[in-house]
Image (cartoon, rainbow over all chains, first blue to last red; front, side, top):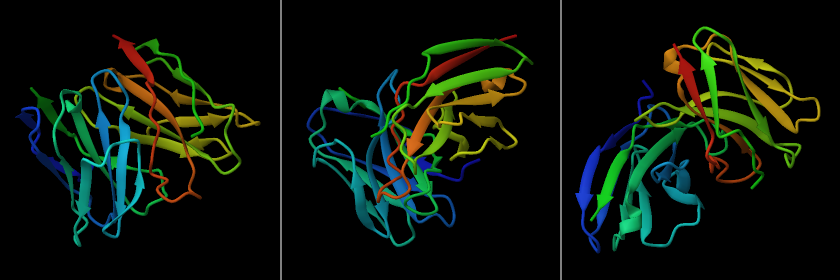
Amino acid sequence: ETGVTQSPTHLIKTRGQQVTLRCSSQSGHNTVSWYQQALGQGPQFIFQYYREEENGRGNFPPRFSGLQFPNYSSELNVNALELDDSALYLCASSLGQRTGELFFGEGSRLTVL
Amino acid sequence: DAKTTQPNSMESNEEEPVHLPCNHSTISGTDYIHWYRQLPSQGPEYVIHGLTSNVNNRMASLAIAEDRKSSTLILHRATLRDAAVYYCILTSPDQTGANNLFFGTGTRLTVIP
């Protein structure tokens, strides 16, 4: 087991609503990354947090935001949900911000109606 | 981002070796080659990585061409549990936020009993 846990595992929202997804990183890991995976596609990088600060961001609008807490757990917040936000959201933790060796959780599947 | 090219799909018989190719002709001198795989309904799983020399671990072997423009992931004896999408990814540890992994669409490996 990777030790990365995400919640909730599944959720359904409607357009315009807001959602918060949570992630507990593997013990000792200080870096958290979030990815979005649409059906049939590979995961896409949203952003990374290291020492509670965002230090890398992919091509996602500002309505995608996040937090990292002192215990290295993290949240992903998405405002003003759109239908295209329906996807599997994956959290990954790593020991350090530049290792390339990530440990992924099983994801939160979001459906926007 | 330096990109990789992989076949969309491959098949292998159970208990036979599998060679998964990856081309990365624009790789830079400091880029690492990472392989991840994603089993159905799970998050991606780290498999192996290397820089210049061939690498072995309990899961697989990574053979890197001398000019580093291509690499091959080798599963020595495919099992049904190895059926997954395999992603070849280049990472740049010199860059902040280097955990921004570009997954692409990967190679879907089917293992035939």
